[in-house]
Length: 125
View 1 (cartoon, one colour):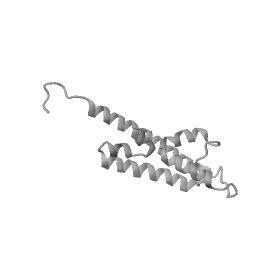
View 2 (tube, one colour):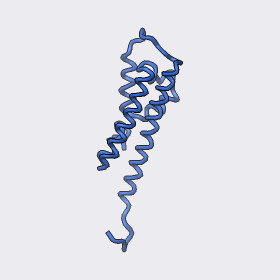
View 3 (cartoon, one colour):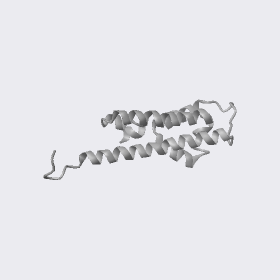
View 4 (spheres, helix red, strand yellow):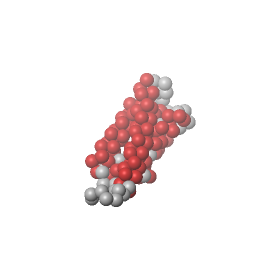
């Protein structure tokens, strides 16, 4: 479960659902990093300015931590495009990716519960 949060899709991959894990990894990862590319690293992941959005973004785990480190590394002297439509779109993309990862983790948990249930007695194996 924790690996599914840290690296989207890795939980499914480890659980033996390799194709689903790869689709989740690519889908969420591409959505997240496309948002960073659209909005810019300096203004898309900003827990000080966009607290509510950051709460959704952090659900993407390692992607958000990497983008946050990139945010810290980009110097302040570069143009800051806060309020531009592209920044808003980038913030939404990254937040949606985080919320998709919540669904992926819940799917992983539901699959684990299903696998641990025993077949009713008298049922054919």
